[in-house]
Length: 526
Image (cartoon, rainbow, N blue to C red; front, side, top):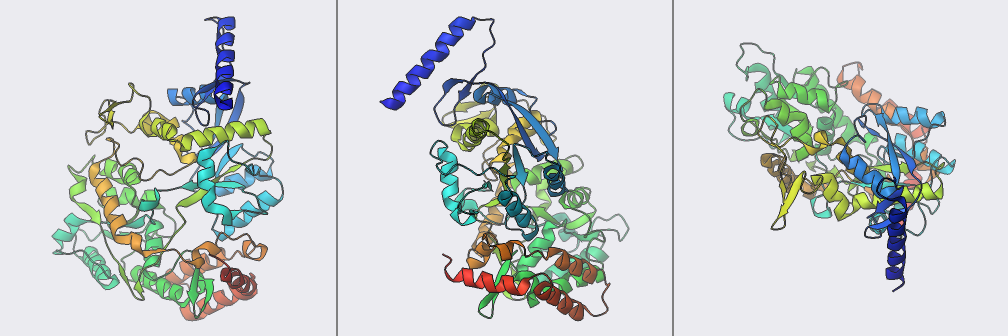
């Protein structure tokens, strides 16, 4: 009864204010559908400054208009780049230019986690309220992540990836099946030896039939290397060996993985630019027919935008000539795919925000997590972008893409990308008609093959522990330098160089103390 009374009073206040203003009066009220079912609130407009990747075109469409009116805010987007987001944020924070809400990379990565902890402890970040009852969708999410608290407080909201039944590590490899047929390969490789045989044939066999030996057998684009690493049983964090947990990058398995990649490089099977080019450059080469096997994020939306839409401009049916390369056999048995507990990266909040502004931020965030919010972000505006028919969503926009599909809503109305603030929504778009169904099936095929290999042991949780000795344990620059130099042939003795790197990690970077504490904490860990 009390809740109904509050709704009635607020509704009456809104009605009276509309009558007093009249048709020509501009109201500053906001509709809040995140927690109160559409109550109209009177509140001054706040400018909400959000830092996110490639967001320069956001905030200029009717999706932004709708959200601004709902929550009494004006959007101000700060565009970051995928390649240097962390560095730009570091510079912004150091200069006192802290956004209200902003993207932050993986909280389990040793380098970025230490910065995040420092920001939380020094008062740069605003913690979430202890009682999240006003934001039920956020509360539901945060109950899963109590182990990520700092001093009993949450300073971030993890960005979800999939529905629980679909979570997996989405990195993998794609192959040109028309090249395989040209070279006489009828079956997909499932082991590393078979993989090398295929790459060798692509190097020597002129699969694109242009009369030149110029096909790049394998362009990993960084994510392909992460997948190869998993084939060697290496999680992206801690691994249990001889009864204790150690960083996976000082394991002998990491040395074996490095030697394998060096073999690919030495034999001309690996893209010479592997160390400097990311997924986008590798995908561009693959789309142009210059590469036989490419590392890729095997998410349907990502594959369509970064790869298949590009291929459709020069190939009549790209879905017929590209498939998943399903290697599952590594030198140590089953592969290991690190489980990020269904999230990757997080959203942080600037401590400079007032409680009122934080409240609006959280209401917006909560709405974006809700069914209504997801509907708006995935489908747009009803009867303008879509209609509902027998419980199904029907896209009513004009087809514009090369494949005869509607133009991506994320391109047409860029503010719909704001859903990425709360979730990667990887599987949420599977039913979207603008997404090519063969890519949905390709992603589901990847899940069916690889989901069972997800690591869900204590080693994965160690990355997220709040522990000063672990948070100050930063050594990835050493392991990355070792890997690149070893593959490029800069060490006369790789084994000796690996031993030196391990000693540096243990003795100069606090590795010995971190390993001891990690194993002590793991004893009582669920």
